[in-house]
Length: 496
Image (tube, rainbow, N blue to C red; front, side):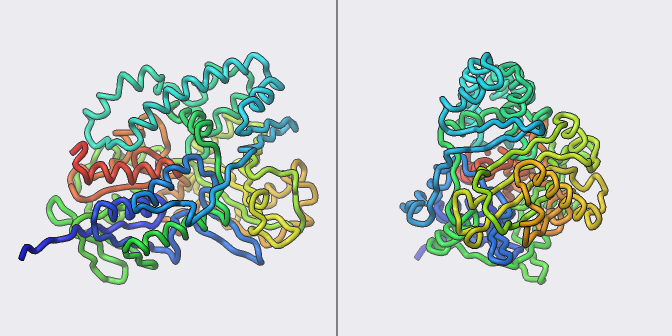
């Protein structure tokens, strides 16, 4: 009788990249165990509950729902039997410091009308921008996002197409070719900030998000991102993926040119044929792997690596309802380029700020007690390279944010705010083991993209794989879900 060995695959980190990896490996017939250091799966998509208010701590914008549908379809199942996605009519409302507003909806005719309020000539420019965005999408997303870039030759093959699409430009630079109005340039270059990049330095490949949003819309999962994590966890359990929580990987074990498994902080050793690391890749190379490994290109000297900004996130409830506030609001302060330079390059904590305000109760009242609202405010700040004392700065920034919102879009906030708490880059470092407390791992610059980003398979250790925000293709839900597709390609022998 023939003795058959089922491939044992170990996934370290239960964020969306790790969950998607575990499911894709299981669909390939592997025996899969998923290790999560925290009490719950989801990675940064944790759920916090305070005094009857619920808060999604992580991603709240779903722009490519089909990527979640694919994970259920691997097993002949349907997402809608596990979770409910609803499309948002208003995607974002932009509030400028002088009181001007731009409402960004899925209705494209409405978008043309909003643009015309600022600059009629920019309507035609926006239409041309969308045409180019579609071309970039067809290459950057459809052709490249799920393809491995473990060989430089893969990058060279794509070079001509990327040059034709002006990927050497920055997002802000490309937007400015089509849009003349300064307000609208800020609106249409906002997307890199949602994945940890500075629009003035992020490769223009990210302008594909414009077409991606137009193609599928922006959705919200009822019950929040936590409900989506729970749905995926249920699917994994049904399909036989082993899940171990409070399991802290202390070392990735290596013998010669192969990993043999993982040793936990408890001292337990778990052996495996493959290890997939879904934490922050810089942390793995710095803390979990042998120091003698050959440095792949992206493992450059620390001084040359650019990291994403840090995040200060203020969570709070209000004992009243702000019914005129959209689900997603982008609140922009007086400075733009200079503020981003201070955050990304100068590493200083500034008195001014720009904010992303999330009000899930606009769509799902279950996030707060009756007659109340649930909010969080995400404030981009310098990562820990600023050497900020967040024990001192945290309360100060909280008060400045509350005051700014009260004076503009949330009147009476200081009288109605309750159950507030916050996270700082220090929390991202300790809770998520994120290098420098960066919100989105390394920044999405051209020289840190594709082949120049963390590879999805180690160059030396052939059975060690990487998924998640720091790897190709990048941060954001579509990015980390695509990194699991790259893993699947590598497992199937593509680009070996």
